[in-house]
Length: 105
Image 1: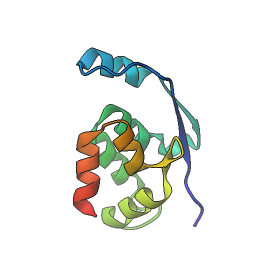
Image 2: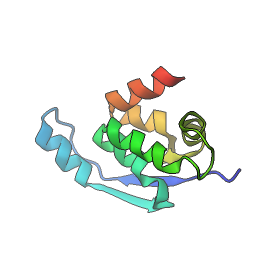
Image 3: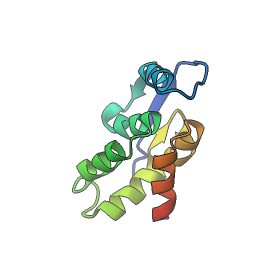
């Protein structure tokens, strides 16, 4: 199967723990490559589990007939900034996305 590739170029910014800084940091993201799957990376950038789940649901029927199998393909083949979605989520400290990914493994 053809590897799906989404490259994300993230502008560097100082990390801050308040919501305003997190939102501003998320705005400094540029998607390049196969942007059809960019929503998975965007979900990690924004720590948005709802967006992550919707992104999986949109791909059901395109590659497989179930959410579970589609999620497996996505986790194995989609990359963000050269990293797996799980690694990228950890880099971005997307705790809700990471917890969900780990709960289904």
